[in-house]
Length: 252
Image 1 (spheres, rainbow, N blue to C red):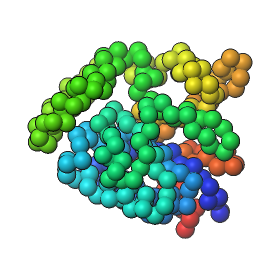
Image 2 (cartoon, rainbow, N blue to C red; image 1 turned 90 degrees about the vertical axis):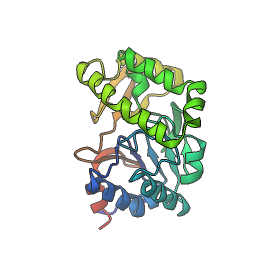
Image 3 (cartoon, rainbow, N blue to C red; image 1 turned 45 degrees about the horizontal axis):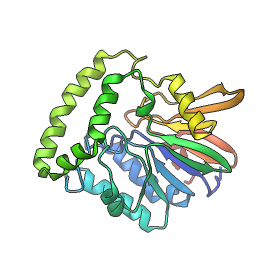
């Protein structure tokens, strides 16, 4: 089946890691193949499994991923990236290395004539107040400046030391706490004047329909790449959440 060359592609929560070489290979195949024929590729956070601590972090597969993104951009393809909770330190230097545009935490884009809000999704989980406190701390400009001044080994040690504590905290939280809060979703959509929202973070892929001020609204949740890697494909025929392997097969 032939597909349009004006697909807009959305992915999130890739968590690329040497522990999952199949997913890294799939990512390369996507970037080297059909994604280059799309109108744009949006990565809505959590590109890396380990915390991104800066451009001097050469922990595999970071250099490999950066080069793949740079090659994608050099091909003339449009690449947009948002910060996820694993890569809150992505900044203008990352944009220089990869050729991407780093989007703000809330970005309204136009897809096939529709205004669409894209987010990583963590800011919508307002019931998880402990995480929101941590995020505000990490995003504090002074904290960020001080952290970036540390040598790379020190930054890595801090990041790796933080992971076990965060994992224990997450395991103790109920599924309800770590999911998005519907009232927050609706508030943010009203503020940005949209009825379409795309986000990741919760690892619960699906398309949710609801009414917002008597208008039909949609919230599309992107899946993670831990198990079955999925991608949102949006073109003039509408939007579909597809396994990446299925999307790639349409070009073979």
